[in-house]
Length: 83
Image 1 (cartoon, rainbow, N blue to C red):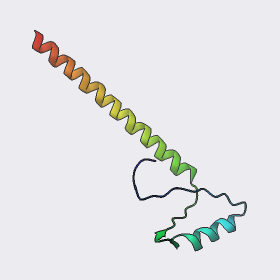
Image 2 (cartoon, rainbow, N blue to C red):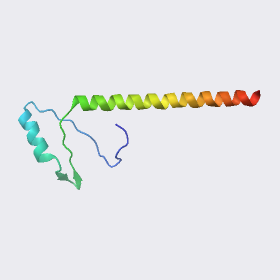
Image 3 (cartoon, rainbow, N blue to C red):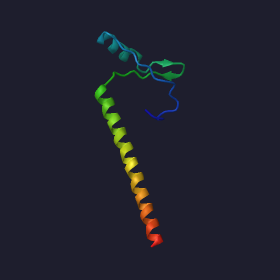
Image 4 (tube, rainbow, N blue to C red):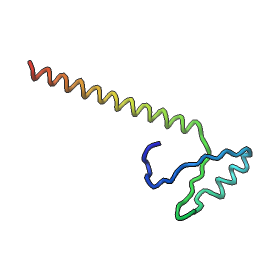
């Protein structure tokens, strides 16, 4: 997930068998202060995580394409200097 927040102490995933228990956890624990740090409790949303992963993959592809373009430009410039 990256270095969005270096103050993060970790991530935990909890699976509830009963949806009502999961809802109670979100309702009662989200924002709860433990040791000066606040809990963030969210529901797992597979579609959201899939979209994020696809966006990160596309971003990585763009970075690689930009590197290739820069390399080709540099090679053309070197070729033009020689001629």
